Amino acid sequence: MDWSKIAPHFEADGSLRDIYICGTSIDDWASVWTALIVEPRCLAFTIDGELSTVPSVVTTAFLLGRAHSVCASYALGRQRLNCHFFSEEEIEFDLDLRDVVGPDEAKQLAEFMTRMGRVTSKEVRLTPENEVGSAIARYEPVTDELVWMPITA
Image 1 (cartoon, rainbow, N blue to C red):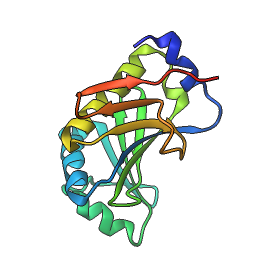
Image 2 (cartoon, rainbow, N blue to C red):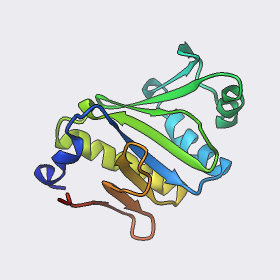
Image 3 (cartoon, helix red, strand yellow):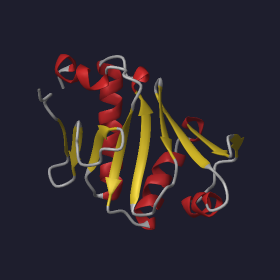
Image 4 (tube, rainbow, N blue to C red):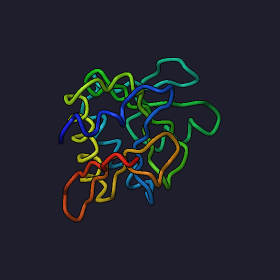
């Protein structure tokens, strides 16, 4: 990874970046959740904006989400990856560009995406906000590699 080539993807412009895992099931969610709760000091869970106990199973988050606004925030170094449990068919994390200031944070993102891809055996994409089809980086489970996309003019 050459930070100088990917840094423009992280220039703060008021938008977020999203990490998507598409075509998921509740079993994929359970695999991701298990990977996240292994590090309890890195995971925070809120219900209607109030800090709450992290559920032991992801289905609890979905049940709570029927009547409340729920969010899991995973601390990845200085970055916060937020997950809102919108759909069982898609796992989405968002992140603030101001938290990605150099190659160390980009490497942490790449490692996180690779880990999520390995636990789900699915493609994982880092994209501009709400642009699931427009990858900045992509983890491919077939090759077990994460590839950064070049900047296009």
